[in-house]
Image (cartoon, rainbow, N blue to C red; front, side, top):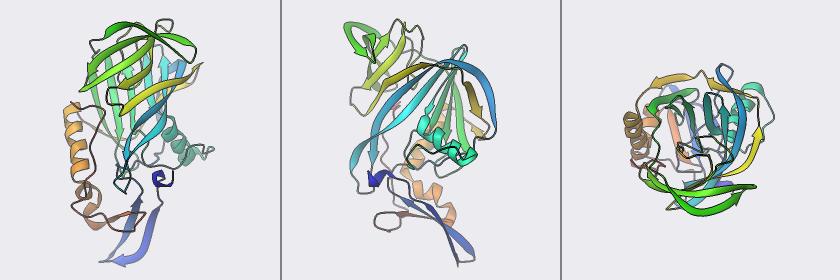
Amino acid sequence: MKGLYISLIILITTCYCGFAQVAVGLHSTQLPYFPFNIAKCETLDSAAVSVTYKATYLDYSVKDEETKVDDIMCLQLGQNVSKFFSTNLDNLDRFKTFKEKRTAKMRQNYLPYIIYRNEGEICVVNREPFEVDMVQEYSEKVKSPNWKILDETETIIGYDCNKAIAEFRGREWTVWFCIDLPFNNGPWKLQGLPGLILKAVDSTDEYSFEAIEIVQDTKAITKPLWKTNKTTYKKWKKLDQAYHKSPHFYFSKGGERKIFNALTSEDFTEDWTIPYNPIELE
């Protein structure tokens, strides 16, 4: 879909008021996230199993049209640490850093977070929109939803799964988990069932995750050493809301950046807002 590709960042060499201006053209009114450099990483664990999920979520084009987009996510399960991240963004990171083959489309709206779990705590790393190699990071105790297990089953990629429902962070989730895969884990922050969660759908159908592959894995579970601002969940939510309410204020950098609609070439102005519909409503 043409409207979902990221436009090139163009360096305008003509000087305006004594400085060169960077122009960023957007095809989506979502916050744009760019590839990062991953040359420097620390190894946290070694994966035993990797689960690939298809994530589906809302997006908003510059035509003010609501649409559904998807991303491919990976859940690496190690002995002590798990990692959940976008394989598409990871592929673009690897292309940028190591010139590895690029298999992901150049898009600005892949899911920008990495979630690590370790000993009852999760660490969430959120990429800064419009930036490269700068992240906001917070940690919090793992909180299990109050699941109600139902007498219903479904087969997902060949695995027999049981159904459960719960409210978590402002959304009602329906999930299917597999007892034969004894991992207290799942996509995003969902966990707390006697088996791996292979499918999760929120009641509004605005967010969903479904496993499409499970493989044995021996790859390292790594954490990139990016420039990090340590914060809290509440502070991050407040900042994320501000990014959507006043994106021009945060990202024009006092006129250093010109942000424009790539389809019409019209500039985004100070009254520009971005629809805010996060996966965590509270």
